[in-house]
Image (cartoon, rainbow, N blue to C red; front, top):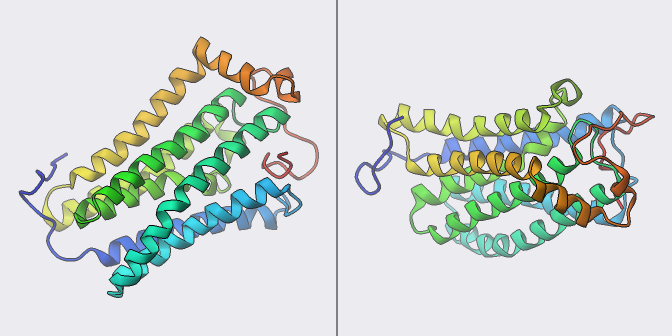
Length: 267
């Protein structure tokens, strides 16, 4: 893959349409995934407050990402900058609530049946921290627009896993359900690489960092999941809860009834 050397060959022209289109596509994946599950009776609004708070904050980020790209595409940069500072604080709430929901599901033994419980306990937080790392880098490089928007694009790609997870036939993809979901998320930055190559003949290095973060998340998840440290982590998190009786690397049987997303009843 040809890579643009930093400061040597800038991307020619404006890419506002591409990034806005990507933001719209990501929002559609999220909305479609959750809407399909709700329409099929596999999900419900009858969930604990923690789950609702988690949903509001994460859906809020999807809206923020879309608005930011709209503001750039329409030249409203003052609004873009003001909203950017709000989004910076939003990340903390996403990390806290995301980890809390993951732990709650593991403790109640409610991890979706097509994931290994320990793997789920590891990959959900790691994906969030990879997202936060890329987003932080994008904020620090906000004056270098080419890096800023591509790193944000890659970070957002990591967040659409739950959308793909509700659109893909996850039970049929086990034991590789999570890996398949991550591969679907990687399609977005790969499309970015193709876009840059068609525009300028080479890909911006930010795509390499984004895809590298995804690969690192995958490798670290697998390493922890199948290590003694992973077993210790699972025991520590689930101690004194129903989840402690669930084998950390065993797939659960599908739950009875239509609610099969595994998230609706988290405590």
